[in-house]
Image 1 (cartoon, rainbow, N blue to C red):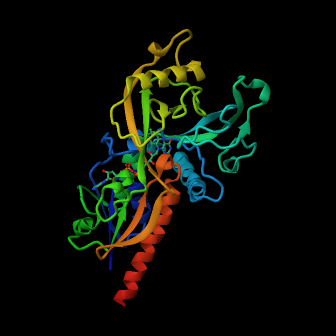
Image 2: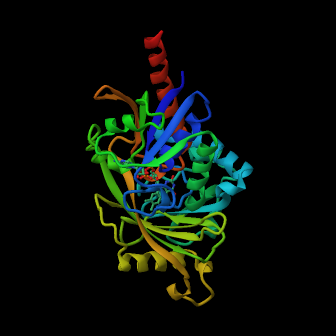
Image 3: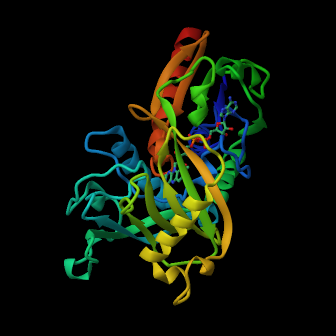
Amino acid sequence: MPNNIVVLGAGVSGLTTAYLLSKDPTNKLTILAKHMPGDYDIEYASPWAGADYLPFGKEGSNQRKWERASWPALKKIAEKFPEAGLHFRNSLIYKRKKVQGPASSDGSSKAVQPHPWYADVVPNFKLVSQDQLAPDIDSVESFTSICINTAIYLPWLVGQCVKNGVIFNRAFFKHVAEAAGSHHSGQKADVIVNCTGLSSKFLYGVRDDKLYPDRGQIVIVRNDPGSIVSVSETEDRKEEVSYIMTRAAGGGTVIGGSHHKHDWNALPDPNLANRIMQRAIAICPQLVKKGQGIEGLDIVRYGVGLRPMRDGGPRIEKDQVEGVSVVHNYGHGGFGYQASFGCAAMATSLVEEVLSNKMRVKL
Ligand code: FAD
């Protein structure tokens, strides 16, 4: 008996979960989504991410477990599948004395540690020696990270799923349980995997009030500084951070950024864009030719994305909605890529639990 599974959502969470589930040939998957790779929309976070692996999960948190679990999978893809749009990049994290914390993707700060947990996960971790630091910088971490070209990686995940027999359809649902009726077999789905990100705030049957947006503004340029660089907080505004990351395979360099919580504004703010570019040049002068300012940046596009934040962290759990089995996998904030495989593996095992119960009921 095949397992009929609907995955609702085609961001990094839905695609990674579908990719893992599709490795089992008894699983027959349909991915249904309003937005698909190739689209740029404020309701679709995944294309806007840098995206790089800069872990910041706190001690004892699920986030830390998921980030740790995701590195080997991302590393394997970067090494074995150059066409997936991932590459290794040297990463420099500057920590300001004032805040003593890293430029984490949720804007949070934490105390400087000489040996953070990810020093044992990422290759080539080292602290840059004190005598090389600027006066306002407390420490600099250097390690090998991965930067993902989301414009290539999301379609690559689609391709892996299609190769494994997954069917993709565009669809929008007001209620999560409705999606059970749209499996490509024509039969009712045994389980829905809900990967709708921030939209789970509005999706009937879920309506999760713990979700809220963390608005991130970026500029993508053609200039290439050579390393990933990020700085903890900016000297004047604590919602604004500075990071620079060059995507693989001609994806350009993403310059950020900001963390404006509960801000739904989809339009780039030109003043913020100017500050982002000015700070990027100040921390990384090699971004432009000697003596140039922001006029030396060759702009591809301005962008805004909403990180799907959730009080208490991502929701990865089983649920029953109007008689339909649902496994949720949403609310990944600013770490949806770097935790993607850990989260998808957990969602996959919950789907397997649902399916094994179904088998027991049938026997
Ligand atoms: P989304 O990508 O939002 O996908 C949701 C999917 O659900 C879409 O396909 C949508 O169409 C579909 N959907 C929603 N509602 C419905 C409905 N009712 N019916 C049908 N379909 C529906 N993460 C990192 O790990 N590293 C980074 O460096 C990083 N940088 C970031 C920088 C910025 C500026 C931003 C905005 C985010 C960044 N992130 C980063 C976070 C990361 O982008 C998100 O955590 C991740 O993309 C969330 O993916 P998702 O698949 O859960 O949601």
